[in-house]
Amino acid sequence: MTLRCRPARREDVAAVVALLHDDLLGEGREHLADLTPYLAAFDAMAAETGNQLIVGEVSGRIVATYQLIFISGLSHAGTRRAEIEAVRVAANLRGQGLGADLIRDAEARARAAGCGVMQLTTNKARTRAHAFYCRLGYTPSHEGFKKALA
Image (cartoon, rainbow, N blue to C red; front, side):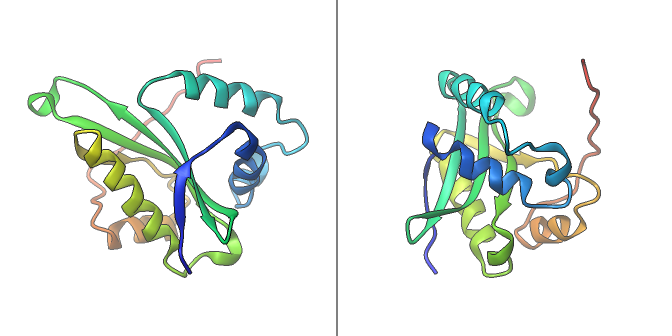
């Protein structure tokens, strides 16, 4: 099975939201009935430099997605970082290597953008995802914190 990754288009938003909804955590926070806020978010992302939404296709069908954000900073002698977020593979295709293909694609894009570090956060409840990232060489080196601002 060959995964073809490409930048998402506005017409892909419904398929991406369906992937975000298609897991235990996402089904409680993503809303498939009204795409208006997702389309607005996509438009905002598309207007930002260094913020990419990527989709993965198999036989022309969107089956995977991730968001890649490039971050410039002074720390580590100005090393540019890439942050990967919202990594998803369709539930019926998990365990077939598509997730690893998706991460390899993200890493290649990050290198091409001059990044020296790839970082991510993942919900503590996603223990299978933790094991997946460790298998790919990621180290659980930091503790993350979040605070709702609304």
